[in-house]
Length: 484
Ligand SMILES: [Zn+2]
Ligand SMILES: [Zn+2]
Image 1 (cartoon, rainbow, N blue to C red):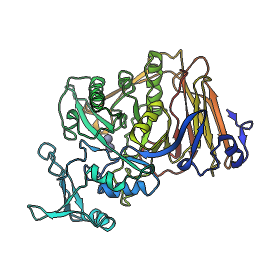
Image 2: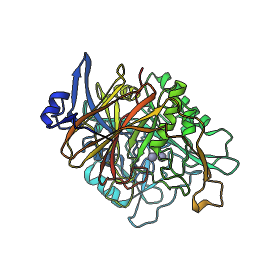
Image 3: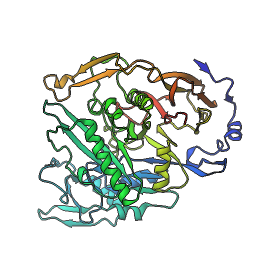
Image 4: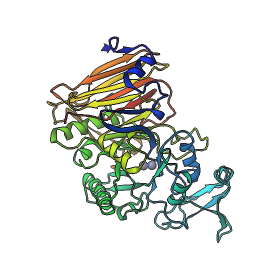
């Protein structure tokens, strides 16, 4: 373990002089110029959010207002299997204690509402947004019209400050004849329409004979070809791969190199931990390195890890896990528009944050050096530089077959989980930064490293209660970088 004594910067002023922007109050206003590069700014955003357009428990205005008023610069309302473009979409109100009716996916297809809203969510909405539109439905129930994406954009967008992005979460269940079942959830961002393959109702059950990688790749292709036809850039993200029960293993993502983004941190999805797995299990950090070690060796693009809230609950329901403010991304872009944000993310010019943000991240591709600037904090921070080695073995060092205790008699959640050697995802350098200290720390790729990424950690409580987060830690992740 190495300390940063040599690298320590003893004051914020010294840090500011070095970085050119460290004296500014954090990312929100951090601006960097130089080297002839265009002026850039770090924008904060969440790309996974639900509203009453699907199973989120807030009207969309309430959701957007939460984020915009807390300094987020962009937001994607990624409702399940719907794009918010129907101006005639209504939702029924029910009493606060009235039993909600579970939607019948086979019958209740849009445009009829699939969910009801409890009166208290409506009261919160109407208090802040009195121009809400209501009517009396055929059964005498009050119905509320849901605002469309176009209406919401018009209301909330502020040039250079806030941008609503089109976003859809495709939610699919893939059943196999042997009884196994996998959930595959995928977001596509900046494509303002519902694509045919994504229009199936949530949780539609169907036995399929297409392997999981091919199923995922087909969805990606549909997004890519539609984006090309429209002449717009889009993002395709594989959501919460190990929810709910190791549903998408690393092998699926090794075989689908066109998929460039996955959620390394999802604030909303709980995760049932397996019995019988080794102590280090298979968390999303581990999955990330397995995928990228194989991809790097094959010359494929590396996969980037994003963080999202997957927000479902907004109104003080702390007992729920899917609340806002858990995890986000900071993107270094030239301007706040979809094209610039997406270009920056494809370049890997962003950090993923869960309660903790570095002050700056840079990678010099000619020197192969990754540097992280961490501002002075109230608690000690640890920076780990993580690599995979060129000579890793593709042969698993072990395999286990697991089933959750609750489903021991069923094939439904049976999973084969492979483990690879420690040349994948090895911590190459650890730097401890004491409380109150700021530091610039770095790692230079060795000849036998395939890539390097950094994870910054700080002990402490997080907003998040879900177990797809590291426990008792606030974290930030850089993207993986390699020479060339
Ligand atoms: Zn999901
Ligand atoms: Zn979701």
